[in-house]
Amino acid sequence: MTYEEKGTWVYLVAIVVTFGGYVAVLLARAGGGPVAEVAYVAPLLWSLGISIGLTVLGRIVVEVVRPSEGTTADVRDQEISRSGDYVTGMVVSGGVLLPLGLAMAQADHFWIANAIYAVSALGAVAGTLVRLVAYRRGL
Amino acid sequence: MGKATRVTNTIRTLRFANGEMTQADLAKRIGVTRQTVIAIEQGRYSPSLEVAFQIARVFGIPLDDVFGYPDAHQQ
Image: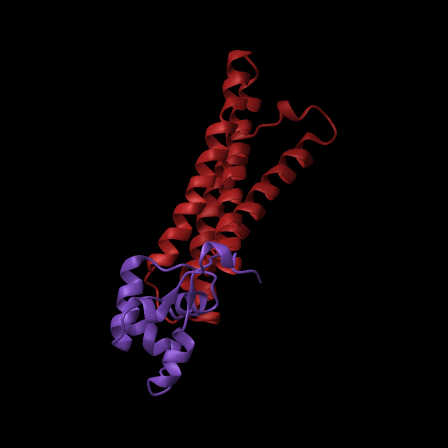
């Protein structure tokens, strides 16, 4: 497994863990009540910060445990990365219609902010999955 | 694991015919990762034209002797 592929796995895990954790925190704070009334800003910012930290720390730990032969991305890594970025862009550009619609409908800030976060996370997950499939099955 | 490209190659044979060159050696000489050489050999990745020429140059043979592409009627 190349350095870039390992990084893709780490990124995927970081996104899934932090977004999943964020949703769990919101639901726990809501305690069965209306989730839109939960103070979401701090958990959301923490979730974003932790995902960055987890990605950096995860890459370091993975390299310590299973060092790569090199850390330079080659032409295949770059092509695979572009494929993933393309899919992320497609998902986000389509998904942005959701928060846009919510804003136009004058929905609560909670729903608009969380729709943006969810669409971003979904796009990132879709892009990383495409990359991982390309690494395993071919481009 | 299915093949992602119809481009065929004889890299594995050529490596053994050239002093049992390892995948790591070939990768180093053409500036890619060993995993990329493996992916090319297994038909999971179609190399760029530049990388293809570099591989042919390492073995000192024409591009056609390294890579092939089946005719339409062979599909």
